[in-house]
Length: 209
Image (tube, rainbow, N blue to C red; front, top):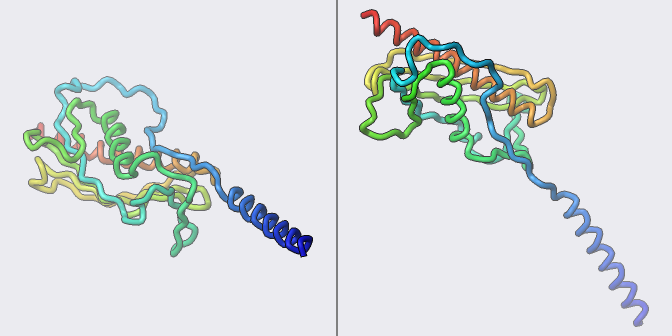
């Protein structure tokens, strides 16, 4: 009887150890990522000093609800998204995206007066840029996609000067998540370049009137 009980206890203990080992095997450390401005050459000297540049308000910026989570998102088919449980953003994506977009804009439009939303009510905004991101993800084939509707207002939301929908893609060249984030950062750089070109055109038109 004692031998039988010993065997039962041994079997239970063995099963428990196997289950525990399996659970531990499923656990892995999370990796954290941030978007960044791609490496670039030093910008050419501006005709207007940065301290005399326009006062720009960037934001608000909106993202789809499916991106309001720490996990990185990849599209596996036209109708399916995958959330990477252990590949995560180091900070809220909206905050990271806005900051990197501002960093890129500052390269193309030399100004010391670029303000992220929300800014002080006393800030004399000359141009406000709003961005509504509708798609922003990496694809399993290594391609990253950014689709955004953006608008430029005269003053703080007073008059729409320009509204445009833009789509950008960048290849990661691999399915590695770090490379995917680098490609996503490139699409933000492309968006900032397009917005900056529009702002420069509007500022030139305003100066010649």
